[in-house]
Image 1: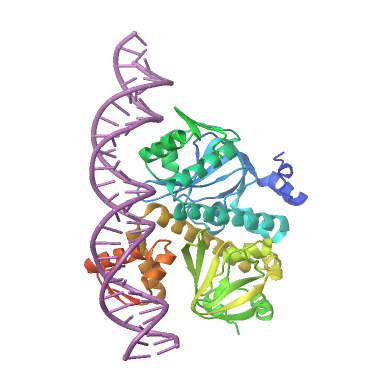
Image 2 (image 1 turned 60 degrees about the horizontal axis):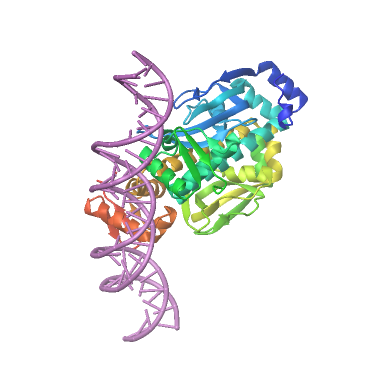
Length: 210
Length: 210
DNA sequence: TTTTCAATGTAACTTTTGTTACCCATTTCT
DNA sequence: AGAAATGGGTAACAAAAGTTACATTGAAAA
């Protein structure tokens, strides 16, 4: 029913059966906050449909988009928070409709001892998230805003599978932890360079963009 | 002999025995590169003495200090690289003399199924490293250089257990991915504010610093 | 339709950071 | 000792990013 095999996770039948039994399907809609700063987490999510964005916030309320989770992904933060009963340091927000399987924290360690495929999955997830954080650090530490903006737009493009990105300058500024004026300025520059077209709440990436 | 119990790791006796058997003690001296970009990793280190710094490098050769590993810590990157046979994305460098136990990659998964304390240790390590990366991102994304420099100095202070930090402006600039002139300028400002004293290859943090 | 509001454009200015260039002092090498 | 290398101070300038302020435009609500 949850049909995780379809997504190439290669879980053992016995594990799939257990997931069927204890995993609870949950649904979220655009902009729903799935996980938040300082909140305790009692379930580990496995995303089955849609996209979740993971954000880090500073004391002054500015945010930074770290990475996206999509089908088959899980949140490593959630895993260790569950197992160690710690508070979340990040915020997870639904981008569009999201479906996920919620695994109760009581099962996580148990499955680690029983199922090699579960161990693989957890290790693999941690590694992927780790690499994404490294990419994120690289972006912020080594690249200027114009480059980062281009990366941001490319990520959106890949994620949406479309050259038309429906987003306001405010949203971009938020997710990149800068101000709207700066983003507008850089976007206008990209438009002047013939790489994008700007409309209200919409950016169109031209062929010359990539 | 390796005496890991002394460090509060709470491994089961049977696991300690296995570590005694297969773990190999390795020694490094200041500035030795323990792990490097693009290199395959076949062992997982558990630090028993000294400090290791973990760095990320960009295409142009600039580096950024991510965090330190000290006694009882392990490198999560190493763990997943071992298990998944992937190349390292980071560089690990000894700060002073370092002793570590090298665990062969063949044991990592096996112990996960056999020893709850090993699972705890791995999960805990991943979480700690994850949180350090988040701190690192927060620093670079949300804070200005002067704040970051103060954090840098505080970290060194804590690590060395001393108010006297033996380091050149060049080194600081390297680890913070900026230029020497900028660091000298900011340090001089801190000195003028009466927070530090500057000498050749040495910075003394005054009481008013913290 | 008129009003209201959110989204964007843009100028002018400040602050922060990076760069270049050249200085002097100390240490190390020959 | 003299030469060379390293570490640090500082000025002057350039580039990048942040800030403030205000105008314009399009969309939605009254």
